[in-house]
Length: 155
Image (cartoon, rainbow, N blue to C red; front, side, top):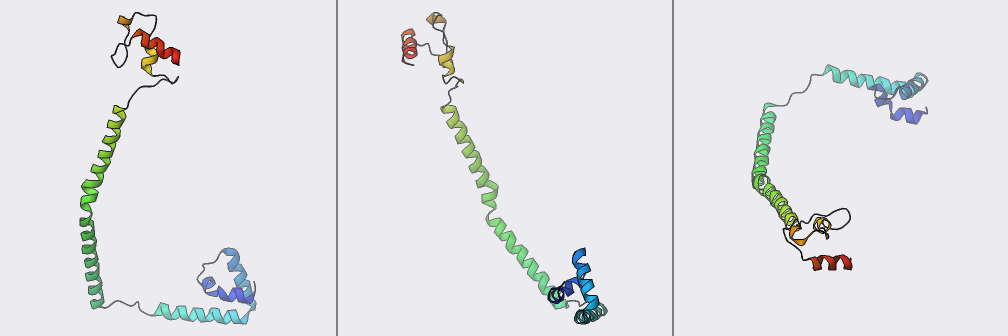
């Protein structure tokens, strides 16, 4: 590994955040490079200073201001939620159910059963060799025999 690349990643090397391969390459370079050895000793010194120092605690006034700010944010979020609760609780479900009902009514109004042949069930179920009085259809209408024969000839 060249010196410039090793020098850039010495801090990451010191924190053991490199892959094994990269860690070994930097370690081999640091064994022979005086500049990198010096940088690693500086990193050790900095780490020692931070480990000896006590953890900083926030002041009581800062903690109180922070908690007050969080409470204010919670109130703001609740107000926004209340502003849209009518839409979420009533309008959107009602609109969805209304649209579904409209689709169902439309489907029922335009419903006509179809067979795979492309003819309606009414057309395929009527038999021409049975007397007209005994014929029936799904629409409960009794078609005239002449109308049936005319539609068959047209098709």
